[in-house]
Amino acid sequence: MASSTVLPHSQSGEDRMPLSFIDLKALHAPIEAELIEALVGTLRSGRYILGPEVEKLERSAAKLCGVSHAVGVSSGTDALLCALSALGVGPGDKVITTSFSFVATADVIARLGAEPVFVDIEEGGYNLDPEQVAAKLDSKVKAVVAVHLFGRMADMKRLGEVCGQVPIVEDAAQSLGAERDGLKAAGCGALGCSSFFPTKNIGALGDGGLVTTDDEGLAEKVRMLRSHGGKTKNRHELVGGNYRLDAIQAAVLNVKWPHLDAWTEARRRHAAAYHRLIREADIPVDLPRPDSETDSSVWNQYVIALDRRDELRAFLQKRGVPSMVYYETPLHLEPCFAPFGCKEGDAPRAERAARRVLALPVHPALDGQQIEFVVDSLAEFFEK
Image (tube, rainbow, N blue to C red; front, side):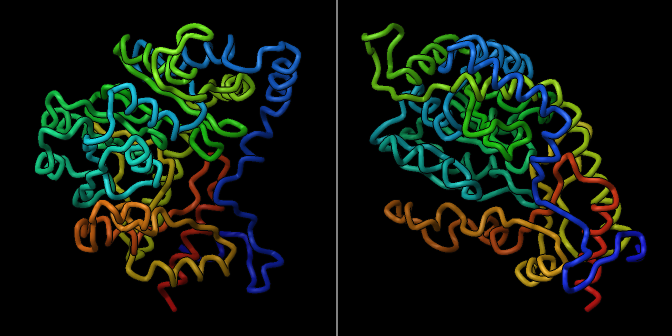
């Protein structure tokens, strides 16, 4: 692919293509009037905590995930906290999870007084390895937290076989709308947890989260936990917290919800374009797994991997191409989890991934010329 296919650029940066890793302004521009109307409507309604907007969002989310119950909460982290609390996780328990994720996945386990048990990621992918989960199961394991990383679902079919009666909590913060083996993200575990952080595939204008389940009893517990453990005012049956979703964030999400399918399709087109162009240019990087007949990613991130990751990132920055590293430190090596006795070498695949992964822009507002510019920049780096 020749560099003449993209807009000109210079080392001074004065005429480079404008590129953002995530361009929320461009995403919101076509629906700005609707968003403003929703914000003003919420202001005038006088209902700012829970209420009709949250209930509408919960119905839409339950339908998307194919479950009976969806409960809006204050963040994706609080969704995980509520889900594990609803399962009764506490001191003396163990919870198995991946070593390659955002810290919230595991810190909620420790906050409840339980022990996070880290397992390595699968060969050739970034989700937890079901066979390593099987090796760690014992009588103290109260739950398994499976992360659907970068928009691609973990192998929930195999995990279900491995875990048996041990409940699986899905960390679907990056994967609403993803499917695998006929199963839907946040719809096939005991509980699913999602995030509406602004940079997610569908994001609020602040924090927000969601817990989904087909279990009426668990749903009722989560509803209680989000409101200080009570069903009614001034009577508290559980020790909960203030994990309620603001109506103004739900109103924003209700405006954005009808656009989610189109935004997801745009991400899939961009991922397919990256796959094709990088292969055509014979660029020596490891590509993420493409979709298959039973595996449909929503591409929250498009992640390549290479040994010279940091060099490439610095080069791209000079070219005006933004990139991100997810995640520089595997969870088992994070200082906050040192008390649990993990050490380097415990999860070699995750450790290798942490040294090699680099996420490229894949947001829905990208255009084809910008993607070509990114790939041309990759090619130029390897031509040096």
